[in-house]
Amino acid sequence: MTLGIILAGIGVAVAGSGDGSMTITRDGTVLDGRKIEGYVHIKADDVTIRNSTIKYGGAHAVRIFDGFTGALVENTRIQCTEARTNGIVFGNYTARKVRVIGCRNGFVHSPEAPATIVMSTWNGQPVAAGDLPSAGKPTPAPDPGTPTPGDSPDASDSAAAATVTRAPTSRAPSTFPGPDNTGVPASTALRASGSLKLTQDGQVVSGLNITGCVTVTAKNVVLRKSRITCGGNYSIRTIDAVNLVVEDVEINGLGKNSAAVCCGEYTLRRVDISNVIDGPRLGSDVVVEDSWIHHLTRGPGSHNDTLQTTGASNIVIRGNSLEAYNPVTKDPFNACLMIGSTTGPIVSNLLFEGNYCNGGNYSIGIRTDLNAANIRLSRNVFGRNHRYGVIARPDQAGIRWDRSTNLYADNRKPVVG
Image (tube, rainbow, N blue to C red; front, side, top):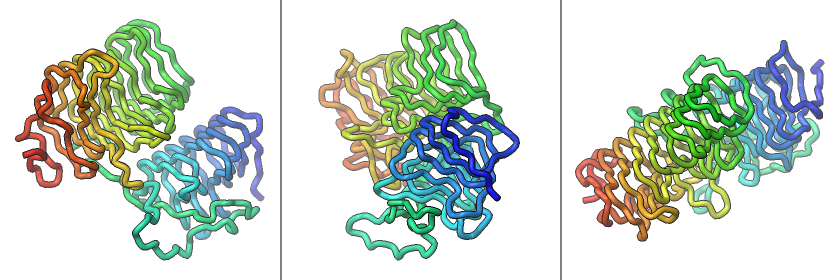
């Protein structure tokens, strides 16, 4: 018989020999490195399950109850031992690097209770949140295996419109950064950590699983091979810092980061950024290279950009995958790169080269009031999921747009004649 465990007063559950079914009722609970033979019922906000395995043969392996939000399941394997069992239901969750095996339905959500699904698989096939019916398109016939409220043990679910996720993620060309060459390298052992304030010059931090945010106030700090899961305004913030280097790091902004990194004096290299409102904010003396910024989160009134500067100097953006477009909701968001001088007098010495960029109202947004000097854009390739065009105002003063080397990704022809 399955043992039920009520986690009402436990904030963090660490690795152990094995667990039976459990119901989590405390906000912010973290299950890390668990082996669970039973279901996980979530009746709390901001619950995290990571680095775990879950085996179950009842109705639903992981169930988020109605009214609770912020659940995160990452780096976890869910195995259904019965053909009738569903993986994760019924929405209001993020699944990141989750493998669902043998389940009738892998990931279930509804328009009222959405899901963010990144780099996850169901029976070996990649999936992403969505492929929902949309206005003007025929509604697919119901899947006979799609779960309904009556499938749950107490029949109390309100997600009658639950749908199964089947849509593949949108991917950059294989020559650009993606899940296989950004973020924490495979087989890296990570140690649990809370929020960090790095104040020592030359400090090197590596191999951490950071549940919280990072503030840097020192010179020449290095942060590498770590995962940051932060629900604050910024996953990484520099305050009077100089020459911060961030390498092989994964940032999950839990849909709450105003910007993944803010604001200047940093280098990002092979960084995987997702689930943020905006990607890095580009202050002065910034390099972003060989990184992957994707799966932005739309908020009320948000104008999401994978990269944005509002006044700075000495910026290099090179060799990145900048995916502003959401292939599930068909939302192009605002821009891959937004350039304006609204908080500073000028944007100068900005190099944007060798990037893949897809999405945006304009993929490269240039404000009419921009005061620019030596902004160079060359040798980039672009997808076609923009709303209006690839670049706004390429001939504006201070902009050097290389018409012969900025190309569409599909046919490698110039995007502007």
